[in-house]
Image (cartoon, rainbow, N blue to C red):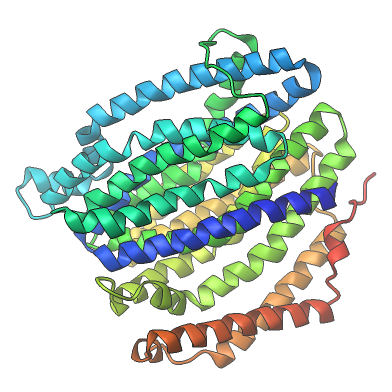
Length: 522
């Protein structure tokens, strides 16, 4: 099973890599167009709110609740009942999200005031930053409908993933990046406010993603006409699982919104610096953490339905080892290479060297929590696959409350960097609580072999960091070089990091078979 999961993980990671690369290109285009100024702050703000809800209604809480029930129906019912279940889920979810979307479009000024309080207060006081509030309210009217289209796209993707057709859903985000890049190049320069062009790119990106997936869903025979099914027993089960999962999955997203709220009171550029650093964090998180979580949830759900507890533990162990061997070096690499990465990727046009330096501080802070973010993605499916959504919610609320406290304590002395530190700390707390509960329930325990494996990965990573520090040019050198020289030097450093990590791993006895073993079971 671990080999099969690895193959599925490679497929998802490959498609995700393509999406993330285009995402970086998109961010480079946006940085060149708007830098880290007021308009950039507003666009990232207006894009963040519907994306927050997307994590709830699309691939986030909905998927965590829907996939286990879908796996159960697929195993125990005939195809007619499976199609009826999907039709009723699509009709019920689609109707509800359509209402939420309409409310969001109509109430965009309220949302802008709620999550951009600093701008709203400036608007009431006739201060210059008040223009950000007006632009944010307008831009939300354009970006919010994205929620409706991407939710239906998420439903389609969840069905395809359950059928082990991971490539389609993993490739789909590429189309959103293409739409935003196209809008930035051809539409934004023709508008008085270029940021509005980017907002329209998000709008059309939602439509294109949905239209792309429908033919693939049709080939499976599961493209059905939506039907209202609020009182359907299976739909009610998804709803019961989803409601608490909304809180559990949304913790990190709520934390980011809280960061945005506090950042609206800070110096102009704070939201943009946090955004660009978060985007680089999302690259390994999506490439490794989310990809592994995507393939592990259907497998764990099938293990639970079939009562294969040994295989359940083996799959959890595989997922843990994968995120550690990928996440620990990635975390260290982001911290060490934070400023060079941001400089090479974004310093051009309106985005200056000072912006790269400021964003690097928050990237280092976010990077310290990368492994924790990944572990949450692994441990939470251990509960969701067992149709237990309440436990992750309880710990998620604790983590969110701690994040609010950390924000208050750290934002005053460290500003926007303190917000990133607080987010990383709360993710670490969340991962610890989830694992502790899995351990207490005897669902999954990290054995001595896995601990030794993780220890060797950490030693290999330490060797990599030492080599990178030894070869790192002085900070001021990067801005003095041409883009070609920057890319060449960064490529050398990344190559050195990969080679030193691989050599150290071989010397320490880390082998591919370490990722394909059965845990020691009682």
